[in-house]
Length: 351
Image (cartoon, one colour):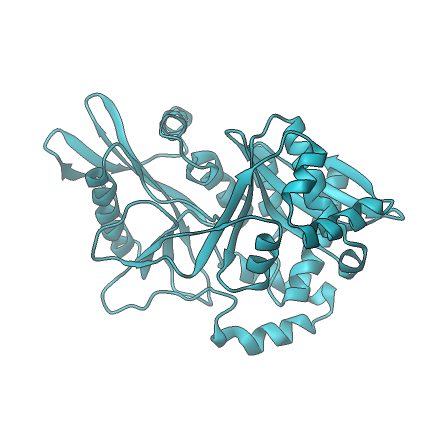
């Protein structure tokens, strides 16, 4: 797809299967300080792990790239087809050398969405045209600088939450960090149980495997008497650690395993040379939102933009929506084996 762009400039669909093209975009993302979710490596890992197609639009002139819009084409039998920037991510949107270029990439995405029978284009960050729907009240991000040592890190946590962390530190947990099969199996077992207990379908394990294989990532697991009780898959990018997919079993709450897990991750990230702990996004007013504030993290509103094709409705995949309350209650009662079998085909469409 080509379109006129500032006379000598063009917008085109990127060929992410071309290693040279993908490497060129990777360099552009790094130069502009993009997130891991704007990297072609992320898009391609998502495609391998979920079978949701990796796409993207590039703007360029005679001097090289001037803009990039990463996209995942998300399809599901339960929801309308959509172009998401970026799929299964908390961030995304266009990277460009000017606001004008960013917005023109969005216009090209509108055209691409119509051509591919997508009902909407969703941006999780970045500049959008002024006539798109923008929400900054639905989600917030939480990030803070890591302290230089364990004791200073503890003192940075508000008193009440610090007491919970200390209880976790008193427990005789075994802490394991890696990305081998033992780590992956433990993480998936804990994560699957955790999301079932929350009433949401679990992602396919192939998604986690693909991300671990393609990006700088690892798994931190806490075991009690040999059994995994809390585990988190984290991403590392430009001095930032991002605990991304994590959870705990029922045992984790009573033993303060989650508190210990995140504190151990702070320690591990500091040893790796990270400077910032990005606790990720949470739905405004949710329990996770309150939990992160209890750790002393200040919420930063996230701006998400949506364009909806004419005569279509934007999809609603928010698990906290009233439309899903009965389904969530039912899912919580499913036997774990049943939830693990039914969940991945559904969750592939929840990008």
